[in-house]
Each structure stands twice: as structure tokens, then as C-alpha cells.
Image (cartoon, rainbow, N blue to C red; front, side, top):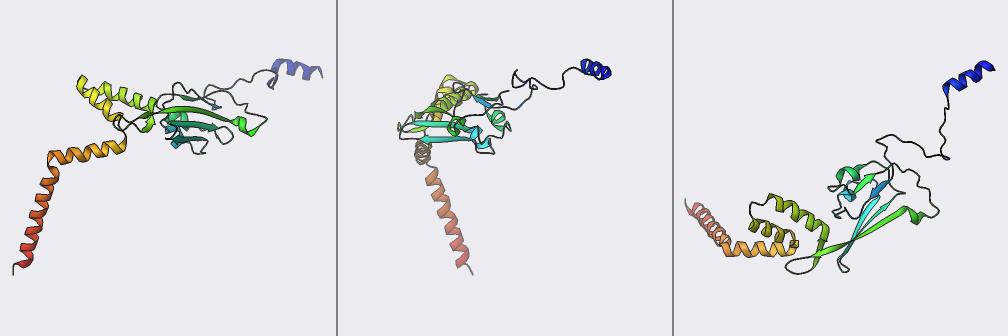
Length: 196
């Protein structure tokens, strides 16, 4: 018996004091994803990367908002959301205690406003995302004029961009050149068919 007590004192405690004391976790522990809405640009990269569909985004153009939500009940703590986030707005924490009294308490939400198109004014993308992309493109611009042109391009919705492209093609005369080439090609095919 004395030998056993001596061995126990030499070995020390084999168990942890959790839940009476906080449990220490390793450095790369994958716990609850923490979302910081102030850093998020609502680009939906985490939504696409999430294999369990725990992260969802719903866009309401009538209200001019995009709602980001995470359901911790579906999360598998894989860390893909953290890897895919361009701004580091979502990180896995050391928190693993997710017991709640109600299933609804497992869901967190954040609402982001949509930016209006510079041409038509319709909401089309999160304002923070438009600003983020404009700043990135502004760093690559060679002049102030090019930076302003890029900013305007980013702040334009896809429908207005298509309309602008069609207008530019029409004013440049490319359509007329294409029609002229097409009619010449058609004429040469007819000539080949009629020659014996």
C-alpha cells in the first residue's frame, strides 16, 4: 500500500480538473468559428467553402441587405471557412463548449448593406466588398485616372456593365467590321459552290 501511494505521489494527477477548471487545449485546436462582422466583406467565400452548409448567405435586394448566418449545430469544425476568408474575419477559437438550452441559440447572424450601382442605383453587391475590391484595384493602377475608372467599374452592376460593353462595341465599329467580314466570307462560299 505504501508503495502504491509513493507511485501515485511521484506520477501526479492523471486526469484534468475540467469542468471545474478550464481545459487547456493545444495551439492548433479547431473549436467554434468566431465571426467578426466588422472585418467581414460578405463575399460568401466561407459559404462556398463550408462542406456541411453550416454557413449561409441570403441576399434581399428589395431591402438592400445580405444576411450572413452560421449554424453551430451543423458545423464540423473543419476550418475551411478560416482558410478561404480573404480578410481573416472568421477564425477558429479554442471554445468547444456549445451546449445550449434552445436549438435557435446555435445560430449567429450578421447583416450587411448592399451597394447601389453607380449607373442605375439598384443594389447588387455588399458595400464592404465593393470597397475592398476597389482598394485592391486602386493599388495596381498606374495613375489616378485609371484608379478612378477601376473604382467606377467595380461600383457598376453586371447588367449595366453589359449595356456599356454593347455601347462601346457599337461605337468602335467592330460590329460593322464583323458584318463586312461575314458577308465577304459568305460571298466566297457562294462563289465556290457555283464554280464547276
